[in-house]
Image (cartoon, rainbow, N blue to C red):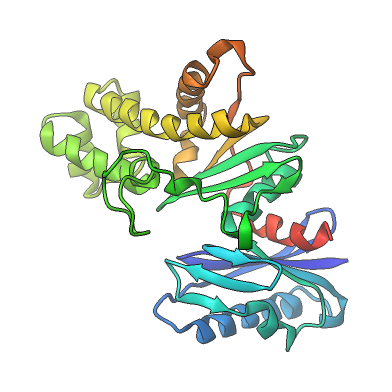
Length: 316
């Protein structure tokens, strides 16, 4: 039995041919052309699905299901993309469109939610029934699993932890609100903080790395901190506080078995995870008296969305 897992992102649309055990047999991706209309992007998704079937060496009637993870608010029951602020989607009937070509079950879900499902079934969250996946990228995505089920909320619009208010009347967010957690804890925010400190401390190791490389990245402050630079250490400490503060709120509400961190920033590994875990453990309600929630790097990285999307159909 074969399934397609499709992960729609702001930069690329990734897909794979997956078996019922979660093994990827063939994969491909295309660029997400966000300037296109929703109809044109749907065509790209359909073409990618057809390519995965033909290049993967199976017949279209051998396909047992297609799962798709999409950023934004998703009405999974109706098969509709209600709204996505980074891609030109609003009230798009994607399942109805794809059903004209594919005679198999088609399931859709929010990208962060399906990535969390992928990690629970095949990655770092295997064996956990309650977990939260937090992706630190351009924004902050959260996928919440409660008793082995994705927490969806009405019309699939729940679980948007990145848009919790961290700072009242704080920095403006692309969602239209101010002070959202993602404006302080995303990789984008880390780069902004790094730039601010490099300008303030032009003789720091951070500033020297930026000058040498000609750019600022999410790695810059961590490289400097590991080299003993005080400015780099200050940036990392400030960033950890912002990330942990949002996680503490999530832990106080859900008290999951574990928290998984994904996105490019997660590549800092245990150096970052242990710092976050210590702060979350210290300041979560009850402190050391309650269950200490482990903070771990998400294992599947870019495959989490693909495998989680496929799992929407495999589980059904």
